[in-house]
Length: 423
Image (cartoon, rainbow, N blue to C red):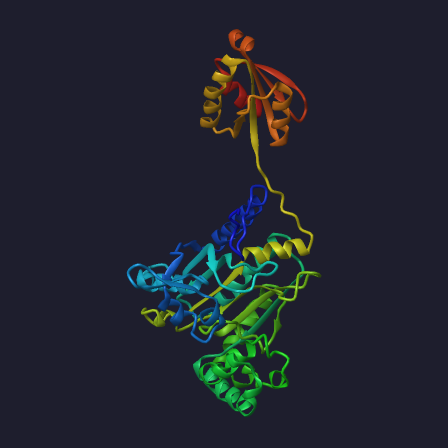
């Protein structure tokens, strides 16, 4: 029986992986413009990091983490998201002491969640995210949101919806928490077991429940916006002011709570409104998480960030009919005829590659016509034709495969002459 790929994972094959590389390079290019620098953290961390950082009332921690004990008896988890690891690294490496503040970081890599696979959702998925740590200026909230929007728009996406909300500071959240408990308590028995557990621990998470989202109490639940104190109101107004100043359209949705426990103040999501994209429309989500650095053992440091799935981004591009050309550039293909020519082609191939040319040759001992077809198949720009007779005469034929024009070049000065021809 053939061994197959694990459920919820995928092979990204040549021809498709170039599209991923294009998106990844675009994300890095935009981060460079915004002065966000890359950070790379371990793929597995101590389980305690995610229990404390993500929150033990979240679906991620309760149902979706890949956790195990290593040979030393330590509890280890494959990272389910990126923020907790980045914040742990920020605190552990004392980046709060860097002379340049705020510390602006981005990450790109695989994450792991045990959830039901569906279109655009995998158990191993690639996440791109940014984190800005050290500033309580609402302008940086707007900057983080604008960076995410610029990435989507730079790839051609148009059917986007930006939704924002404020979760307020601790005082506002505590007042809202008490109101939610009073609201749901009398009829909590009508809700799922998860919601019943969340009532006392984190009632805000009830609003994010997928099973009970149509329950009548959900529609009449008290809004966080009704419980924002003056400072939280002013902060949210400033964020909205800056978004408007950046010409970014947005919708305020008081039911937006996000799925992680560490959020406060600004929360946002970017959604696709493309027809046929699917029932789950969220492309990107993020928000402010003041207090998380302190939870990880660092000083009280404000932070804000977002994360997005590359797989979901590709699905959105497909839904809008946007095709990223998978570029694979080959400068030349050596067609060698005769034993001496084949032997020399090994040396010539190495010289071409050393000179910076993307080059290939035949390794299947094919005839001339088949070698030409192989060169066309990989979209080579030039065919370098070398036979035993040409080798003795000191000449090499070069054919432009687009125009059909053929030129004779000197064997002794081939690299220099070929470079001039290419220019």
